[in-house]
Image (cartoon, rainbow over the protein chains, first blue to last red):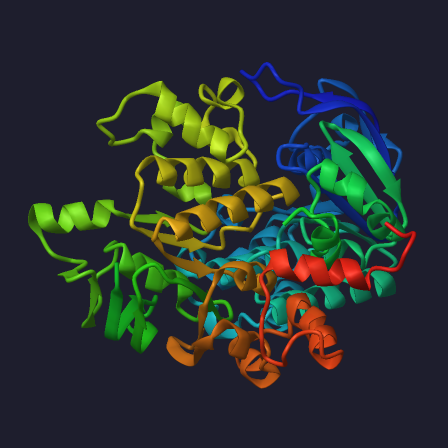
Length: 249
Length: 279
């Protein structure tokens, strides 16, 4: 389980708290969706989960250990894999193939095992045809697929997708999420979807809505339909039908 | 401004010295003041098309005219043309050049007044007092997208090219974008929207083009394209929610089959369909 307890965070040089006494839990298995308005602290929360950022006050625990106490920190990064909103921020390699192998190389996975995993994930994410290309030269949607594959290949127990499928065509997005949810089910691992798509949040077992750096609503996916007017007030996207009915389009 | 794209070929170099066509013989015409939606799977050439239209890439073959002028025209005429074409990138942070939001929005502009700048920022739903002195590089994607939009509005473009403008936007941001696009359309601005969000496109576009492997594979009026499951399937899409809502209205005879309503008219119908005592 990932647990935020009274977490406050502010970026250096800023006078605004992005998160204010934020408390919530992400179960150790199943699908959790996080939604919220722009600047509400969703991406910051993702970076706190794997220790890239640390709270100013409060604590983020992963499997009952505060993120600041994981030693080495690389163990925490392997346990909690975050796919960034902007894939350009996470590329480090000259080719797609090397990018996918990068995490496994750092984890000192034996070569034959690594070779097999890279091949499997190139195929699974439909990247075999562009394996020799530079990630930087790809289209936005292709970059997102590379970023996803390069994190998923390490099989983190907690896979956090921070609006990581936004540039995929609807069919590709649907398939990728269905695969990720099925895998979380079979591995009994956890998938965290940070999303602005109501249809993605409806796939989750648990939904957390953040507003102004704090949890304003949480529960099963049914809260999305039941609270459409409240979500609109908070700036959270709702389905087209709910938006039209609420006179907000 | 009319846009005429004729037989355009553009290839990106790949690692082994060969090249891969991103656009291969694309021809399309857009009438001045029209709002056009462009769809297609990843790598189909949508973003490349916008970069060519802004004159940031040079095609290997074919031509692109905006108004009467080739977009690659040298000298002051070409420069003036390209200044009237506003482009927002898929990843907003890729187009930031300045250390503060204030400098970013007025980058390269003679008008240094804070009033116009604050007005444009406010239009995008961001509070100038809270944002003008912040770094654009320290914002969420949704906030960054609004900054780009503000800097485009500042320049009063005649052509708007928006690459996935809804990505990262929250519900409020989507309402803001919708309002701005409606107004710019009424102002006669020619608008090209690259988006996977067919519900969003259905609110604004009158014509659609679908690309696959660098070629135009579907084109037509909005209603025809978004209600054609086979055509959408060819470019990786499914029937959107807006079409499914319309199908109910068509089946019930409340709207003539094939006619597509914008949200304002559609809302009235949905209210009538809404069960009493709910919501």
